[in-house]
Amino acid sequence: MATPSMRDRLRPLELLGFSGAIALFTGIVILFSTRNWTIALIGLGVAFIAAILVIALLALSEKPNSSKDQVLRDDDDQPPHE
Image 1 (cartoon, rainbow, N blue to C red):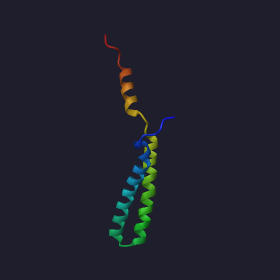
Image 2 (cartoon, rainbow, N blue to C red; image 1 turned 45 degrees about the vertical axis):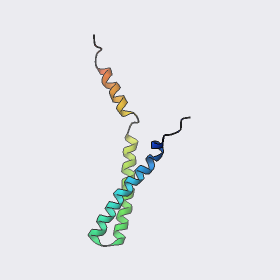
Image 3 (cartoon, one colour; image 1 turned 135 degrees about the horizontal axis):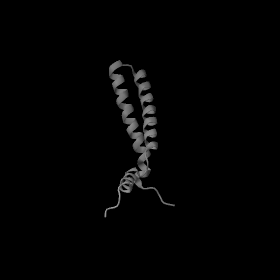
Image 4 (cartoon, rainbow, N blue to C red; image 1 turned 180 degrees about the horizontal axis):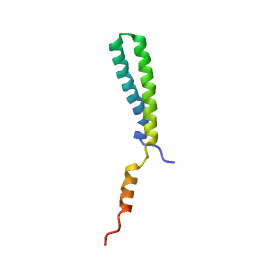
């Protein structure tokens, strides 16, 4: 059984970090616009959960080797050179 690479092991942390950055930005914008900590924390939590869901769904829709498959499909469509 092949062990996952370092990039594959750190991918979930990368996605959580990106979601956290989006949530932090949203929370800061809400805090500066309303000056209410409660609403800012609620907005931060909602933005974090929404970002995780969107990023996870986009990651699931990605094919693992889509660039290689595209190259092979393009080559198969053309007739052989004589």
